[in-house]
Length: 399
Image (cartoon, rainbow, N blue to C red):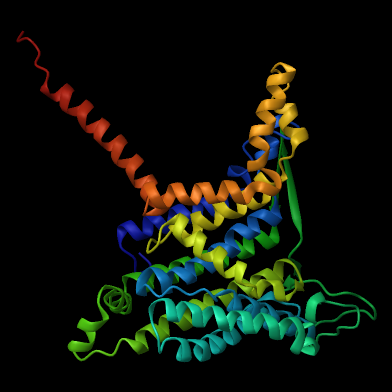
């Protein structure tokens, strides 16, 4: 169905169910409870889950299939964001044209960067992409200030009057989808639980599902097979008369377009664009997302993006006061000791926890979170087989 095999279609349906029910799944604890701190079902964070999932899916098409490690993918995220915000400032507040412009401009920029960078491979390619990203950041931060807004960035203002939008004089425009405000939400109260169904999240989730479906088709296509051949052995491809460069360039451009799509969606969710989106740390973040989730897997990058954004937005909010509340049942001296030991790993120290998680995954789960899930599934599968085997091996006395 949809041109997918049974396994791939089941995976797509699983992602569909998880994204549609995310506001409920990510709010497992009732409001006001001590564990409500760990709820992640609010619109801003859910939007980040799916937007950075798109970013990581696109990066995985390049890194996971060809083995080319880019340290500069944040440049395409930034270019897509700037293209989208200018589309909204000048033409229309509708998010669809903004996303289209983000994809086009990011793709064109990726074509230029890829044409130059792919003349080298290995660490030299990685350094070239990093150099392009840092040059893009410097241009956005200072040189191209009239276009990028410099350090303060760009946002929709009361002076903006998009051609296809009917705004009153002095009114500040808002991102919309055919007139529907992207910030519109419906709140559902069920007992002590509060669930928020946000328009912007579901738009981003729908776009992510389309991006995920396209990635599956790329992975299973002859083009995907050629990309795997590039990763396996480029010299053998050359000996057979096949030029790997057009394939790697195509993968680089597609990956950049995914980043531009994510950048356009970020503008649709939050109409504020700054040069920090192009900084090298943003490029490093998507590398971590892909490795944590599972390089070369389909759903892995989405899981990795979700893990990092969860830690960034939830674990970083836990402070010493919350820890003291949790461990108040302990004697005073022991309570202070426990809080002292845990505090460096939460709050501002959440990066330390992320580093430990990354080390453990790389050492014990080279295939990322997907490999961890597969091991658990195999473990339960073996237990079921052993139970079935033991029961089948038993004999009953003849009647």
